[in-house]
Length: 82
Image 1 (spheres, rainbow, N blue to C red):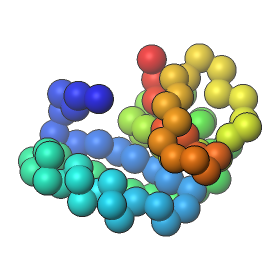
Image 2: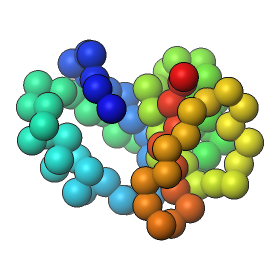
Image 3: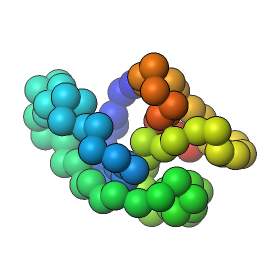
Image 4: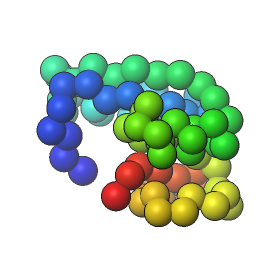
């Protein structure tokens, strides 16, 4: 995944991010990441309206036209607009 901006608005439903954030900071030192916790339905609404850029969500859940990438053996996926 390539980032073409200097800020990423990311919401997540659980506290799974310490290792991911460390790798993001190392790979993209200028990237600003904004985190907020919420439930899957609210995250998907924020994605479809452009309020956030990506979200870690629990599936199964209908995600319509959003793209998903399996990240872990758990049932959490990254959802983002195509």
